[in-house]
Each structure stands twice: as structure tokens, then as C-alpha cells.
Length: 257
Image (cartoon, rainbow, N blue to C red):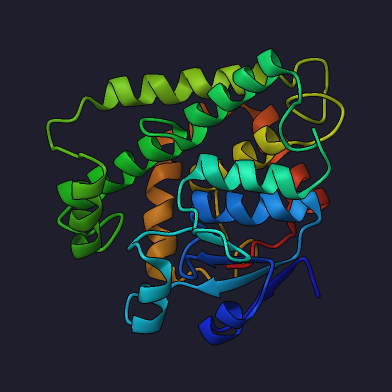
């Protein structure tokens, strides 16, 4: 099978190996990172596009959030760290996460600054929610979506956006520094989990023309555009080049959701 195969829920449930439920409406960084990890490891994945109206899918997932990863008969995994660890286990040893303990601790710490609570993806989403709420849905997400996300992300209209932006900028600068000297990758001479997360989590901060992600709906393309408008100038050029390099060489281009 191809590294990434989109299937229906019945096919996924009947299969063995890795099955992934991912968002099919937007290039959500968490879903795209999960796909990217297994792709980089050469592990075939059957992907089901998430739908809140699918009762069979909801019962199988046991959660209301994506991504969710199933592997054989093991319990489903819905947290980025657990998904990353599984992908590391299923591929070549040391390829996705370093074997050395100190190196691995530093790498996972940086992954948390990208994918964890109050990390890069979390904070970019706060900007998108803020644009929606303060414009009554004229910018950003449709207002019902924004209100749903606001509750999940602890958003308040009194949010200190300067603090949020500073944390984003600090993380981006730390990542960009790893590309000093013209390096292609962030953690050595080959890509690993850090490269996958950095590339996929920069998508909301990047322009997303239709050619880059053809399935992204116009209304949601506009929502992602608010993060780029607010934060795009904070992204170092080296990271934008790294993102494009990762997608073209390793993650598949254009982005398929």
C-alpha cells in the first residue's frame, strides 16, 4: 500500500497495523504531524477523515478530538507524545527520536514547545480564536467554531497577546538557530521528529494558497490566514525554507487532507 491511504471507517477497523483518524477539513498541525511521523519512518498508514456526524467512528475513537492512532490491538493513542513514541518504535531505532537519553530529553522538550499546551500550535490557535471572537466571526473561524475552541484552549478576551506572541517568537528563534550554517535539518544530518513537528506546525503561520492544500475549504482557509496575518512576520526565512524542504522531500507536497 502507499505510505498514506485514505479509507472509510469500516476498512480501518477491519485492518491491522497503523490506522489514523485525522481532520479532513484543515491541515491541523497535530494531524499533519502524526501523518508525517509515520511517513518519515516508512510505516504504512490507513487514514480516516474525521466526521462528528459518524456515530460508528465516534464509538471507535472513544474521544471527540483528533488525531487518534490505532495500532493492531493496542489501546488508541490521542496525545502527540504517545503518537510520536509509537512511530519511533515502529521504525528504525534512533531515527525519529535520539537513543541517547540527554539528547532525547532535549528533543522531546522542544517538541513540547511546539505541540504541547501553550506551545507554538496552541498559541497560534489562540490568535485565530481571538480574531474570530473580536470580529464576531467576520475574521478567523466561524463564530460557533471559535466559541467551541475557546473553551478547549482556555481563551479569554482579556488574553495578553503580547505575551503569547513573545513565546511564539522565542520558540521560532530557538528552532531557526539550529539551522545556522546552512544546515538542512534541525537535529543532525537527517530529519527526525523535530523536523516533522516544526514543518507541520508552521502551516498556520504560512500562506496557504489553494495549490498548497487543494482540499482546504475557503472559509477555513480564511481562518488559517488570520494566524499568518498576525504572526507571519515572526517566522525566520530559514524556517520557511526548512518547511518547504521537509514537505517536498519527505512529507508529500501539496498537503493532502
